[in-house]
Length: 314
Image (cartoon, rainbow, N blue to C red; front, side):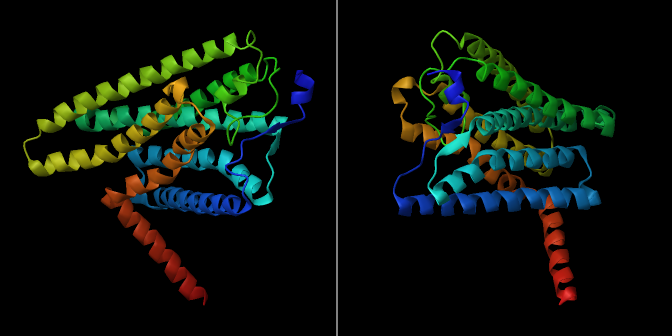
């Protein structure tokens, strides 16, 4: 098969061919998508509107919610429309755009989680220097660096992936355009540079992971030296939501990347893809709001003010 025929359209893997199950899939994904939109939008609005939350930690949390919104909006709406209208095709340009944004949001989020680990490290291990090291300009630069790293990685991977020759059909065994599944369609001798790009990215991700682990080793060492139990509890409360989000994000992505080929199947690949592309953006707002009193108070104010505004209109 030549690239010219691949340019027309790509066929995605359907969750099911049964009409009733297709509608069930649409309903489930719609509920998950709306929950993710609501949770992340509430956090963004609360942080933006509440002056008490104008701190580095919540600034990074706002950026995390923006990335989560972008991440879940890349693949889920297209999958829902495919199930609703019983179609499987996506245009070549749409497939390339989908791959670009998935790589962009996922890698930018991972970079941002690394920055957030540094923020927690400075807050607990170097509190006297926090105002200097985490000033507004420094925070903006670090957030911009996280977004830029995701963008540059997405450009690299999208350009490399779609510059190879395709000769294995145009059906992707996934519900969105994913690099490993697209590479299965390429000629065996044409994707080595893509593999090298993936190796470089994997090394960068591993470096970020090591940085996060070392940061938390020092954080927990510092917390355990705090004399008061109340102080320890407060410090742990600051770190546990971020640590939970990192664990969820990293475990799902790593399992997707490193699962043995002997276990690979269309069903398992679908489940794994849902785990790393749908679950974290939906669960992250819940994780951060459950153990964060300041954020819960801001959300309550936001909801109450919206309720009173609605009553005033009536």
